[in-house]
Length: 340
Image (cartoon, rainbow, N blue to C red; front, side, top):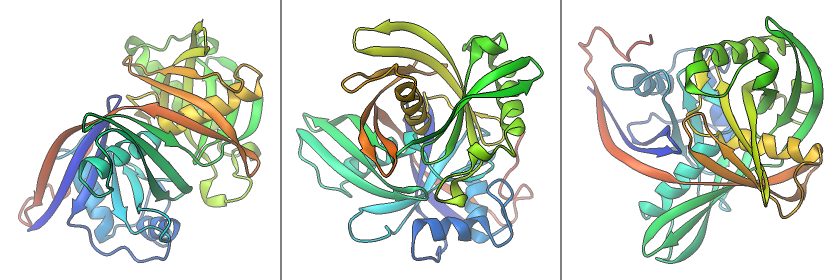
């Protein structure tokens, strides 16, 4: 009988399942190397070869223990003593290189669980190694309770502002930014769509089509690390009325193989911030109010430049939803589960 334990959070509605026990050893000296092991020799991000570690991913992301929208992370050692821990991000299709909403949840969990000591009032920074680099979560506390978390991402690099892409709904202009993973941004109105739940099937189909159309686009290649190349998510956004301190937008992010982010997407918000700054629509001291398709909100702001990119900060809230013990009975004919 295999047993896996988890603590689950949601960040602005998007689940994040933190695995606390039952993992097999994951060899490697860095988080990036461990992700390569997780993918398996000869595997890909969306089609890794089976492994004991991948059995756990499938067990937790598939029915009957999970669902097609599940997201989570394996906590692993940090790259060095300057970080508190590392994480391998996973979803139903494989392993991602970045996850802002997951980083927010991990920051809350690290402090709430006592893994990282924090005062009852004030802010504590949790440093986390992820496949795209080192990120941090500033955990804000009041009265002994975590009230919000600010995710500081790796620098975001814009590689295209107005790239023309042909779709079945006509040509659209695409912006590309690398913010730990590569995101393509498209105005939903250019596709004849609105960002609301009634249009989710059409939005999902459009996101998958645009991602496929960009498969060979040079601007989707990361300028420094080929492991971070290729479009991971397509952000379909619409404008909301500007606020006194900056723009406001609503988005739905279609990532991996047609998954929908229920949150405003943490790393995707970093991509939007860099694109808005490059367009001259977001300046120092301003912030973006970024709303999800279910109405939850992140706020984001540019926080300087480093290594040729824009450093961004994204603030949101994460809430614990449960603590779980999952068992895999060797006699269960469904094994690690199924996807519908």
